Image (tube, rainbow, N blue to C red):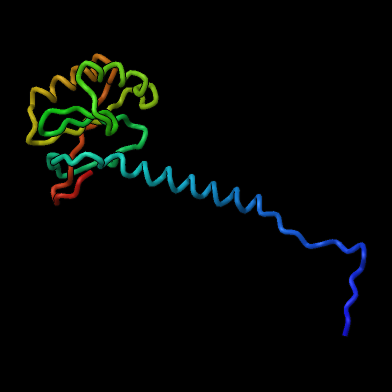
Length: 138
């Protein structure tokens, strides 16, 4: 049994471009969402306990002070003199709200100086980082 093909027959093709676009968009989405969740808990701070806590918003600039007195802005180490200049552009997006996370065994004087720098940079309100009374970090 012999089959004959027509001379003018159209070949079936499959266009991979839309599928590749969708796969790349999904990959970019997963990369972005996985890095945003890790940002908040990047520093090992022993936060003070509180009976009630509120979930942080991702657009909030976070200033962290560890037990040794080192400063971090959104997970990147900085100094007290640089903090105001780095914080000013971030305050417009957050509406003047700054998150402050400080180790409970840290130096109180350092935290007060950081609060003063935040105020000088234009910070209007502070969102203090705590953990729940059960021990889970926020």
